[in-house]
Length: 389
Image (cartoon, rainbow, N blue to C red; front, top):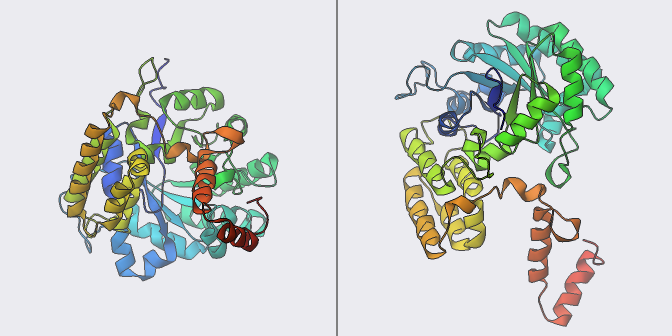
């Protein structure tokens, strides 16, 4: 396969409860050129020292054992809508990062309630975001980036707003080729055509990074060829398989290690930078979430393994769970060469009846729950209405 252009960046996306320090270090081993911090709430970061300690280690909160440059290049991402607060938060970290980013991509309801993320793109016709960008860009010594989605009102409105962001001082745009409505079961296809048009019209002014629809290195090559972007950013595929940026052999098999080895490497890094010390934000909750994604097929096949992960109360307990997964692999004659993405495909892989894997699983589990006697079953159906659910 044709190589990825040497100057095309491979970037680990900012992810709440996921872009923790150990995971960033793991991804750097396997091809990620640039990593982002988790999304950080600017107001809480500036006003709550304990919250700040979860995400950032300064002279006030030192992080022992991290070698100089080991977690670089690094971009710190903040969410919020107050220009002064956003600048104050960024000033705290600017000496320890290579750039600062504004989150204008989060589509979750919590972002809607807080008027940040993808919803900030639409507030005041974009005026509020432009003010934030102008204030931060003029007050920082490092580049300011903005991660955006396509506006629900269309591509032309999106490009008009992105132009204003660049005029206000944005030095790089990462474009997720979906609207805020496209999430969960409604994720849908990423619009690489839209990203290509954005690159065509704005790529001469600032670097444009393509985000969305990147499941492996073959996808990355195709995306770069299709869009002409300066790099690609991935989140969910890398969450399940951090070596996703490694080039795959011609036969399509994985180039990197199996999922259990990857999980062990991650847990070893967690031991080096424990949840209460490594700037992971949510501690063991974060570690559990990673293992659920990395080992998704195993935990789906064997519920006791899933329960064992959930029962862990300290980072020292995870190694024993991975030993149990290894035993499961031995009993089932697991072949690493047969592994493929599972958790990443839950909203993408179409099975019978045109349903995604997640929808099929929900229907299957619901059907099992309704395998009751006729009277009880009839009562439950009457509670939920007809069968169109």
